[in-house]
Image 1: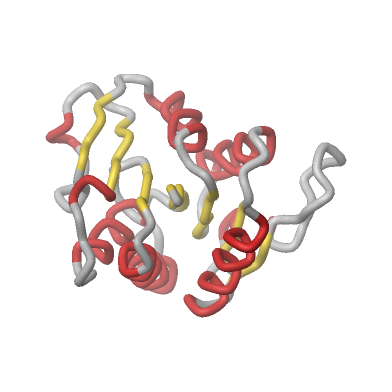
Image 2: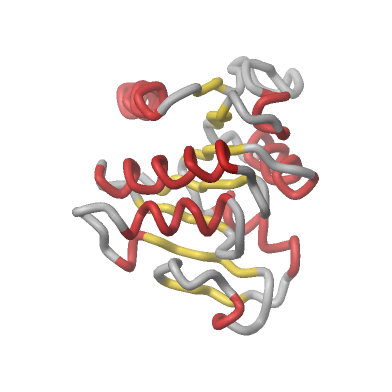
Length: 168
């Protein structure tokens, strides 16, 4: 499964630690990670993915907002330079099967709304602020009957992904 990891471009100690663990776990579990390839949550999750014993560079995809792949963080695997700025958010979500939000500001809010409209399952980390915490457990609008799934730990992330596999 292709999992988009979205969130704060700066993060904080708790958000970045969870992103690192999530990146490592998702790679361990055989998933492909797609993110925006810059700093904060994106960098922490990519760094975590690289520590996985199952790491494969082609399963760590960065869709960059800039036109120069060298501007992305040094931990990303495949770097796709778009020169689209925040327009690249749509590409991140479009190319994912599910979304994990960790903290985040306006860009993350945009990505969550896009994921909602594109009917992607969304999990949101709770415990360190940002839009992920504010929207966890909510339904954005009446277009869907589900809610954004709150996750407090890596084991809850694993349970959420298992529930998605069971639905397919």
